Amino acid sequence: MHVKALLAGVVAGVFAATSAVAATTGSAATEVVVDWGSYAGHSADGATPSRYDPLNATASAPGDFFRMGIGSLALFSWGGSEIIGDSFVFETTWNCKDASPDDGYCDSYPERINVYAVSGDIADPARLQDDFVTPDLTPRAHHDLSGLIGSADVVLASTLGNAEAQDAGFTVDLADARSTLAGLGKGIFHILIEDTTASIGSVPRRSYDGFDIDAVSAKVAVMPLPGGVLLIGSAVLLMGAARRYLA
Picture 1 (spheres, rainbow, N blue to C red):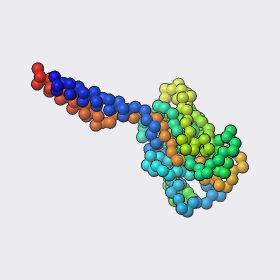
Picture 2 (spheres, rainbow, N blue to C red):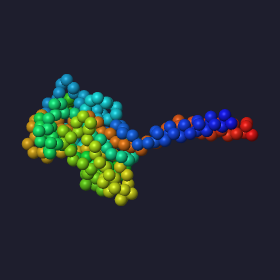
Picture 3 (tube, one colour):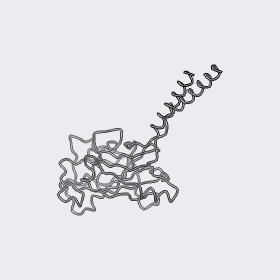
Picture 4 (cartoon, helix red, strand yellow):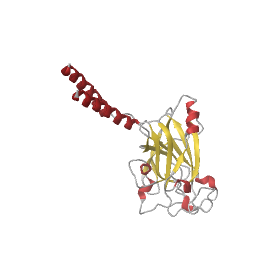
């Protein structure tokens, strides 16, 4: 009886562990591709040239941020996992002060973005070239994302200024976008961010590097670990053997 109880506990524990892994979590994006806009008029920060690297906004480079550039588009993904909760955008602007909270911008560096929910049915973005040169003089991969906006698979979820995404970040409510895509039989698998800083009007030169993304995260559905499945199978086999032994 002790063996049965022990094995039953092992199976229950494994199921609990795999259920916890499959639960929704706030996870940083793991992939990003960029349709580059412009950095015209902006000079590189020689001390931190790496800030033009889009991977800074993913899980692979915590602690730094990505300078998008005016009019750039960045498509974030989570390794094929579906986004089943909200998304979160974090922006870094030092000494951000917002004297007019209604506009949502940092007074000294006014910047803005649109955030879109994107289904999993879009085609892989075409890689146009490998030589878009950011202000740090680094050639980077350039993808064509311009055709996404306006597609039924891409739904505008929010518009925000950089002051709204400081510190604790900005929560992008995806409920309406999810409902829209669900009406087409689709879910959300990507987040598309469009820099719209130029639409503010008279943009100071110091904003020419566009929105500075520290991170994009989302609550995603995570598949159970294969190791957990193997443990369950082993436990079931052991229970069968124990049953025969105790019979």
